[in-house]
Amino acid sequence: MSRRPTPMTMTECTVEKADFLGWTSEELVTYVSGLGMKPFRGRQIYQWIYRHGVDTFAQMTTLSKSDRSMLQRMAGFEKPEMVERLTSSDGTEKFLFRLADGHRVEGVMIPDQNRRTLCVSTQVGCGMNCRFCCTGRSDLVRNLRVSEIVGQALVVQATRLDERPLSHIVLMGMGEPLANYEATVQTVRILLDLWGFNFSGRKITLSTCGLVPGIARLAGEGLGINLAISLNAADDATRNRLMPINEKYPLGKLMNTLRRFPLPERRRLTFEYVLIRGVNDSQKDAAGLARLLRGIPCKINLIPFNPVPGSPYEAPSRDRIEAFQDLLIGEKYTALLRESRGGDIAAACGQLRERLEHGG
Image (cartoon, rainbow, N blue to C red; front, top):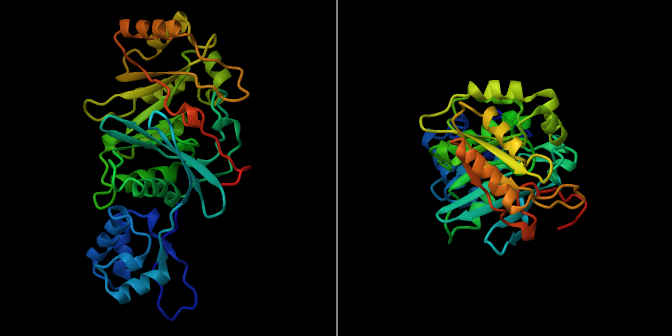
């Protein structure tokens, strides 16, 4: 998370530049007020960055030249660089971003009728080691800073000035958001900020593999966003096999924490369930899932496994998938089959992977 330096006098020799992309509008107002600027200038700057997508202070024409010059010396808002943009035959887009230190992360934009949903990354690599996930097979390199997470949305939004703007944000790209807790929560606050992106909490989803302490802590933040849990099994033995995190936070602890999670009115938890042939796709598995989630306001997204190079897993047959779904529907659950999107550009669920070994 960005450190917020206090304004320094012009007589000091060196100034550590403030990174405005890591701040809420209130923090920016406080900062510019300390420089002797009117508080409303902070909100103007915020709107220039998030509403207008400018790249330099020189473009902020509502500020005086002297203020722009001072800010140029003392602050910045460096965004990740988009170095690759691939478009799938179904309209899904995958983006490769290069960070200031040369590391790369990926994001995906999914079009769906009137929605434009952007999945952003929160870490370089991932340390959760989920067996079915391509990203999980690479080690965690480092957490992303707030500016690097928010910057993904800014850069993609700038490419869509003549198209439909982003409507939803999902924190479920590369990495585990709750393993980078402080930066993730600050990012959400910026996405919600009235003077910035001004997203509704209903349009932001945080997806986790089940870090129980992070879920419990998130419950007290009052953010009002959606929570999705990558579940993938209804018993500890199977989930241990697929998701090593379950050995530390088994299903009993996870479910107890989720049952206490505060949900806004008329909202539900989302459970993501990747269906893998011969592993978790039987009628017994479906019945176990129905029992496990009983009493939790939720919907279930069923996701046929997407092929990952070198993986021993396969997707179930269509008949088996539909039988799994039918059992859940018969148990009065909302169970949606999520068709694979962006598979031809390796943008489908579970396919994102850092490409540090490649240029581009």
